[in-house]
Length: 89
Image 1 (tube, rainbow, N blue to C red):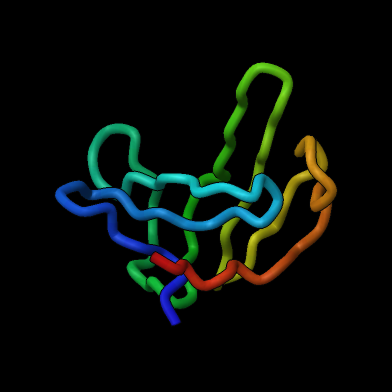
Image 2: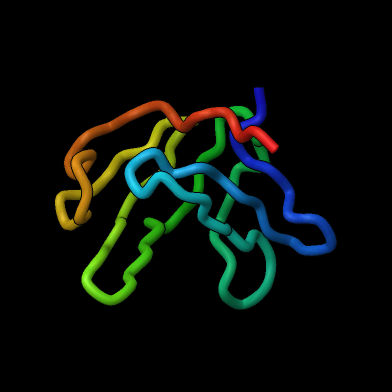
């Protein structure tokens, strides 16, 4: 099942982050794009993905459909690797 969902009318994809319990957007073309393997079922992006907002941070890698959370995350999944969940519209 797809784990990345194309954001209509853009060159971005969405994924659900179980650490943040929210959706993150990944642009795959343009000057601020991540490298992406093109696979919506087992995506890999590079470099790491980071969200920082006020006193909250989420920092991760996505490799072969797995999320590797880095230790600087501010949620309980920090330092853990978990499967990237299916994206449900």
